[in-house]
Amino acid sequence: MKKIPIIIFLFTLLATIAIISSCQSTSPLAEAKSGAQLWGENCLRCHNAPSPESFSDAEWDVAVMHMRVRANLTEPEAVKIADFLKTAN
Amino acid sequence: MKNKYFILFLTLMFTFSIQKANAQEVQSTDEIQKLKQEIEQLKNESDTYKPGKSKFLLRGYAHSGLQITDEEFSFVGGSFNPLFIYKQSDRLLFESEWELELAGGEVKLAVEYANMSYLLSKNLTFRAGKILVPFGIYVPNLHPAWINKFPTGPLGAGHDGIIPSNDIGLELRGGSYLGNLKINYSIYAVNGSQLNDGEEEAEEAGILHHAIFPDNNKGKTIGGRLGFFPFSDSSLEFGISGMYGKVGAKETDMKDVAALHYALDISYVKTLSSMSSVLDMKGQYSGVNVDDANYPFHENPDDLITFDNNSSTWFAQISLRPALVENNFVRRLEFAGRYSTLKTPEGSEWETDQTQVDLGINYWIDWRTLFKVSYRISNSKEDGTTEEPDGHGGAPGNAFFVHWAIGF
Image (cartoon, rainbow over all chains, first blue to last red; front, side, top):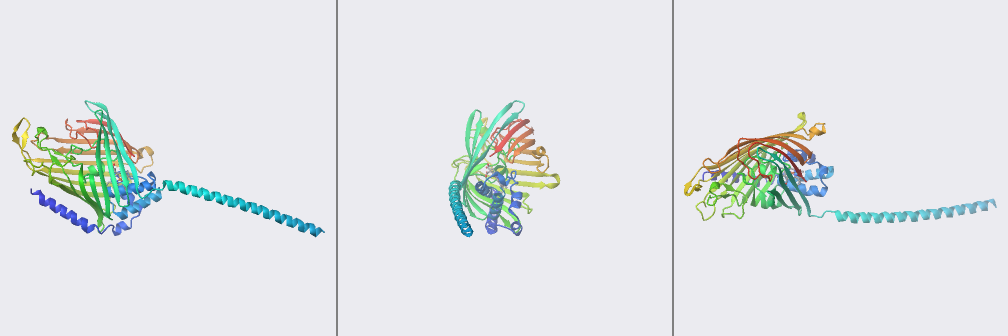
């Protein structure tokens, strides 16, 4: 099947990018962003952004971890967003 | 003599004041003791509620509604989807969503997903189990009824659609930065779709069935998705997805038949302060090419037929919510429109070429509870999505819907 080379190429590319970039979890621009800003930019991409008072600190810990995986957030992003939600609730 | 009385008076006063001070001291030590006890009690009480390392959430969503078509005027049961999320440690997460659906007077139970995620590093997560296949954006991100802006899914999606829904396997996923460009990625190996060879249901020959277990062959299906955010505010995302694997059953003529699924998706969500609104645009093009094969002809199973087994589907949707205006009623409204189409192979028994336009107005009660009122204009009398991901059969033809959905 002639589609195979395309798909192999795509996944080699994907794997390479994943490996190369696995060392870079932030960028100068992202570093400068506050938890509130990251929340405002990320948490409305798929659904309405939940306001901090929706949940308790313990619940935010679980929900943000869930969203870190679902939305492919990096650790620094997830930590800043969780800190913001937990101080503003 | 006078002096004597005076000294006696002073001595008495002194003794009296010392006694009083002593009494006060006794009283205040009592109070401190009491306070200490209260603090201890409160501490014990709060310790009872102090979460341990392992935490969990029981959430999910439910929905149902009213569906009006030429032939039917019916409340539809919708579904109740409990979601269990366990954060076992800072690295280990388990998630599982079930779907309890009312279908024709019976309750159907399905496990939408059940998987474990282990955070390997700051930007790589390993997942194992039954997952929502990271193919495009509709299935993994948009299908829950409180997220989907429409009462039904777009054409082509759903358990019998051409877009893969859920599957069992392993996945590596994450997000990171290439310079200032944010990207996210996912690669996975799953059982994959299964080809209907038409031996039992000739009219379904050539259809791919998703989410059936166990696998019909030993070959695993591999796939992935790569997403880019060209703008630094993450408002725009482009995604490209691919999935390839054998779909034919082992030890049959179809054992080497493979299928390639591919998709392009786009998402743009931006708060427009000039319009006091949030603009949300999403779209996905998906296609599938299945290798040629000979299938039994339904009128005479001894005759074989073949066709170019290629299908495609796409949708584009836009919604505007004036979330930042003063008026409390207007702020809760949302205007939404969606176009979707589905094309299945010419010459197959399940050939179709459908389009649908859905126009709707939503009213949000909170961030994940809403009423949806929508009208569907369809070019077809057939039902492209017999079993919608939202859990209710889509009505063929034009239809009017009033639905509600709650996320909790």
